[in-house]
Figure 1 (cartoon, rainbow, N blue to C red):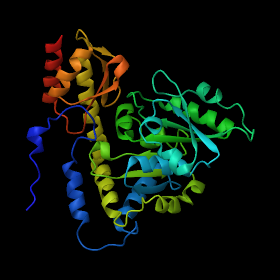
Figure 2 (figure 1 turned 90 degrees about the horizontal axis):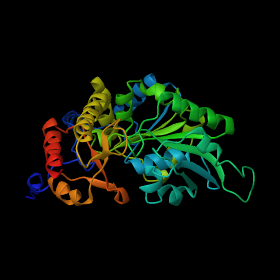
Figure 3 (figure 1 turned 45 degrees about the horizontal axis):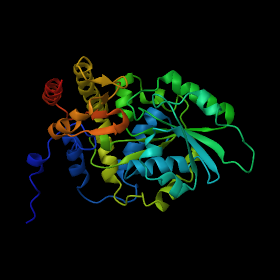
Figure 4 (figure 1 turned 180 degrees about the vertical axis):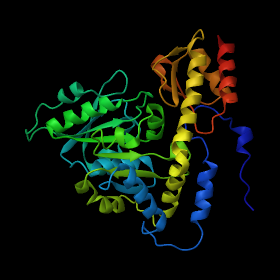
Length: 350
C-alpha cells in the first residue's frame, strides 16, 4: 500500500500562498456526498443545476455560470467571450493575467495584452483613454476590453465607485469590462457589500470567480452577465478542455461554499489574520509596508539579509527582489498562533 509522506513534519506552514492550504472540511464532506450514486454528466446534474439557480437568484436571471477546472482557463474563457484575435485587452502591468499565465491569453486567443503600469495595481479611466489612439486604424491592434483584478495583485481593492467609473468609461468607448476574481471572496468580505453590487450592478460584463484559494480542492467559475456572451461559452469551454464530465464535483464544492456563507466566513478569517500580521509588523524596525493591507495579503519591504532566515522559519515569496518586497499570504486555516510566532521572528531580526 502506498503511504503519503509525512510532509507536515518536513514542510512548515507559512505565508507563501493561499494555494498552499488544504481544503475546508465542509468542502470535503460535500465532495463525499456528491460521490453517492449516479447522476447525469457534463453539467446536467442536480448539483450544477442547484448552483446555477443559487447564483442566478443572487446575480440575476441573465447570469451564465460555467464551472471549469482552474483560474487560468477561467480568465482565458471569460476573455474569449468578449474579444477577437485582432483585438487587445488593457490590464495593469502587475495583473496575474499579464505576469503569471505563461502567455495563455495570447496563445489560446491570439490577442494582445496591453499592460499599463500603475502604482497600486489599479486602473483608472484616464489609463484607459490614454490607450485608445488608433481605433479604426487597420494597422493597429484594436482595444476591445479592459480587465481588472479584484483584489489586485498588490492586495489593494477597487471601491464600488471605482468599478462603476471604469464601467462608464468602457461603455463610452464601446469596451467590455472583465474582472479577474480569483480572490473575489476576500474582496466581498473586506468591502462588506453584496457580490452583485461590486460585479454585475457595477457594470462588469464577465468575470472569473475563484474557489481554490479559499478552501476548495479544485474548480473556478466563469460568470457572464449578458445573454449574448453566454451563447458560445459552452463551445469555447469544450474546445479548451475545460468541460468536466463529472461536473458535479466542482458544483458540489461551490454549493458548500455558499451554504451558510462559508465563502465569506473563510475569506473574512483570512483577511483578519492578514490584518493582525500587518498591524504587528507595521511598527517594527526594518519593516516597511509597501501597500495598505486590505485583504489577505501583506506586502512588506524588509532587509535582504532577513529573507533567508525568515523563509526557513515560515515559507513566503519575494514579489519584488529589487525592493526586497515580501508577500505574506493568509488562508482560511491560518491560526493566530502562527501570526504571533512569525511576528516574534520578525522582532528577533530587528
